[in-house]
Amino acid sequence: MPELPEVETVVRTLAPYLTGRRVISARFTSRFVTPGDRAKLARQVSGRRIESVARRGKFIVIAFDRGGLAVHLGMTGKLLVSGIETVHTYGLFTLDDGVLLYDDPRQFGRIEWGHARVAKLGPEPLDIGLAEFSASLRKRKTQVKPLLLNQAFLAGLGNIYVDEILFAAGIHPLTPAARLSAGRAAKLHQAMVDTLTLAIEHRGSSISDYVDADGNRGNFQMLHRVYGREGEPCAACGAPIKKVVVGSRGTHYCPVCQKR
DNA sequence: CTTAATGTTCCCCA
DNA sequence: TTGGGGAACATTAA
Image 1 (tube, rainbow, N blue to C red):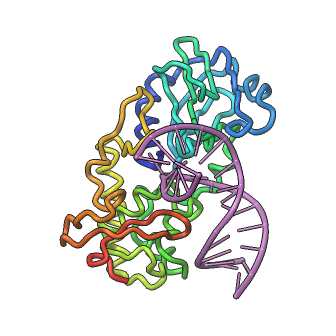
Image 2: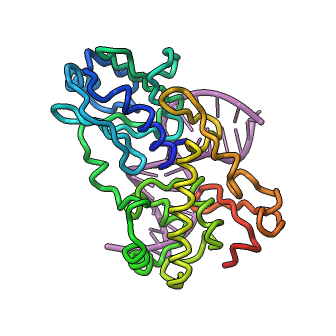
């Protein structure tokens, strides 16, 4: 569920509620979401004042007056400021005003003390300039789709947005990154900025699970042009959208607009 | 019953 | 060291 536009929307809805709040107590109940000593994590968080809530890649970074948390929503994670506990609520923060719930049926998400994983992320797609982006593409022989999914290369893109961006740029997902011309690299950069910006404006994509911190769904799924549209006519040329498997991820593209 | 799902990591092989 | 492919993690919905 959560790629850059979804996590950005969660952060924007979360920050006004959390900034300045104090954590009274916390409880964690999943050995997957919170590996290691869960009671210790609850003690570390308790009593802390929340200074800021920010996004880095797909991580939600919560900074306290001392230390901080990195939250990754995995596939089905939700951070909710207005919600009720379910069987899949694996984190509960009691605040001086309200509660914050972490809900995650598949438990692929993580709540971790510190920023160890955040430090390993590549640049932000909305910050990297064209020159640096083109230069880094040129160094990589791998296929462009798996490369864009690599969080150490760029932080925040996932399966939906890579497919949408490659369609907008007219680039086949299996094209070797190093073989993209300067013109096509520029087109890819522009498609990345445009697609992510528009998706944030539409508050992200709600395919099945995703909701923001208030429990509201996003709308960008209405504007998907290839993701989840196998067999439907291409918006640009009318050819049926194809779906193949690349690196064990479903990959959607137009065989006419995105030639190898 | 089988398959696939917005993600990441690890293992095996070339 | 790089790159490709697949499995694993846990759950649910189609």
